[in-house]
Image 1 (cartoon, rainbow, N blue to C red):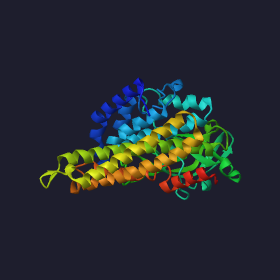
Image 2: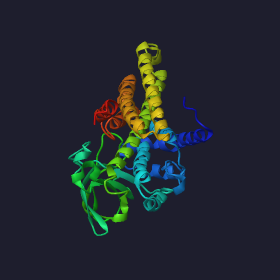
Image 3: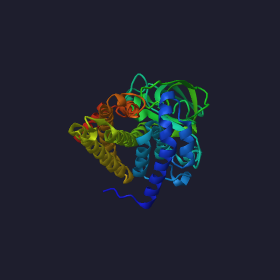
Image 4: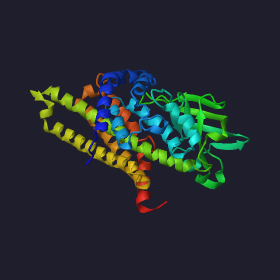
Length: 382
């Protein structure tokens, strides 16, 4: 159904080699320290996979969404935190690609080209509203040649380390969501104040920041598109991010399943390896069926994005994220169960994978929100 061309095969072969040699050995220390994966930034940048969606026009390799999903999946098999680094980069990049005028694209996208280690990200969520973007309290007021933003963002990926972020704020609250606008904000702009980085249960090698916007001055030319176009820009970016989160979840589930199978083939109980026991075989069969189903739905969704079928792709992205993240959670929990006490200790990676999997059910909108999106889209209820 999804045949890889020669370029895709070469890219994935290269990614697998990099992951096995450079990323997998760092996964456990990264989780234990909770530090940002600067080594992964360097490694990915050196090998042209930090920003693979970047258009060729701006110095990128411009892979398809399908190829990008497979890259994320391969990395997530070994280290979900390192895979999330690519998703954070994609969010900040796509917001500019899909909405900004050419001058903004030239200014910021070219900074991501080649072996650049420039980091970007997205700031959409706020403490008081969560998924209720309609109630976004951050406001932006145009005074002279600058917009001044006042508010607070939370759970901003790469928030405290990004060289530039895309932030959303109301420029005219009376227009509802048609009054939300998007801005590119650089590190060092007066009024952009990183408050703290979250101490998380899983995905510990990632940065989720709380950021204060204290009369943050943003040049007028850093407005993405026109005033009022921020909401549609945000939705399009989040739809793509849900697809990428699904890919991350598929990789996580695949990695955990492989660990469980390897263990089951070695562990001897009652005179034979536990892989001989029917209950273990049933659990592995359910794992494999779930992972493959989630993968196929994710790849189909990626193809819809690549074909430009945005409306259908958005609904499918919610489906893929829902199914893949629930699968990742179940598979990682079952992997721990198969490995028993050893699955629960940090000598093996499945306990980390289980903690990492939980975020995929929450990120880019909880799975309850995904069900709401799917139901509304299919029934036509706004």
